Image 1 (cartoon, rainbow, N blue to C red):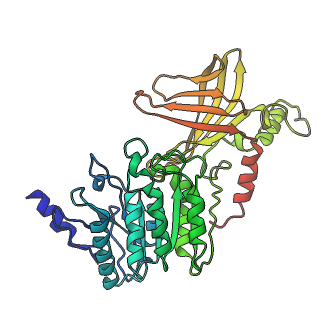
Image 2 (cartoon, rainbow, N blue to C red):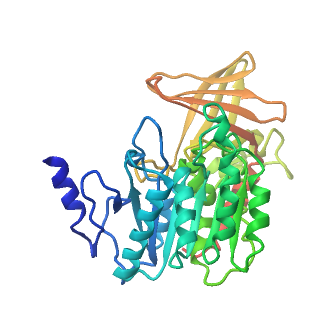
Image 3 (cartoon, one colour):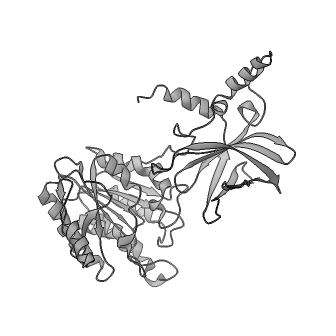
Length: 408
């Protein structure tokens, strides 16, 4: 009874749009986010996200990937094509998706984008092949025929069945993402896909093996949102596009203005002069000696959840260490940027920060001068890893000067 009630509610008006009805057990469209939709008269268009298909779990219960928030915030109505495993075949589900797109066009949406992950990426491309109503496709890690370990006999079909699909999509822009370390990917798909799509007079984008993103589910991370969210937004918003749009994300190359840092770290020279003036002296001209301005050694990187991280060693006494540890904001509003001063030790070549009631931080040196970082939650149940590279703190001063001229 409760399931029937929930299914009925899904067919009611949410915001200004009456959604496609979703009877219990059937495949249909649901809002991707818990907020009112704008409706066809006010939205930039409709984005339909197509989840993957697992053998043992219902992917209809999987979270909406964070990168779609960028499209929602840019005025798109984002919907999910939720499907149950039973009867979820490429042919049946693609036909159903075609019908749902037709209903969205009938409701008045002028632009339709199909996005999909894995099996859902294949569905999106198949529907775009069958319709002229689809304006663009965003396909991440397309796969519908299993992975290398469990389905070796059919695994290569993830490539050989994909290429004919790309050749048949004649109207829609196509954006593809392939990730290294994806055991569903036979390899070499980026180059072949680019060759196929470049033969059309329509915009396209192929992002092949992007740095820092690995595995079949890389597009579901906060890091993917940070690095490619704006590129996807611009790909869909462009009025005219011919040829390939190249995505070269700048996020993560240096600390962003979103990071909160102590003033003496951002403006180390001013801090040195102020300290010298306080004792009646003067700071020496030129660069302050040490691993960075102010004598600090500093490293910068980011965690897989899309939060920047910075470590700056301020002082050492024997094996004792004092440092600034800063993280950028998360992708959720309840994850603000923050920094703190941490006390730690140098143990077997590692920086170790273990303080009661705080997260545990470990930093191991790398041959390239960077650090391998491990963060562990205070309860020890959660951990993340990141690669940090050496940072010249003058980047922070230049960042602040640059931001003064940016419109607010």
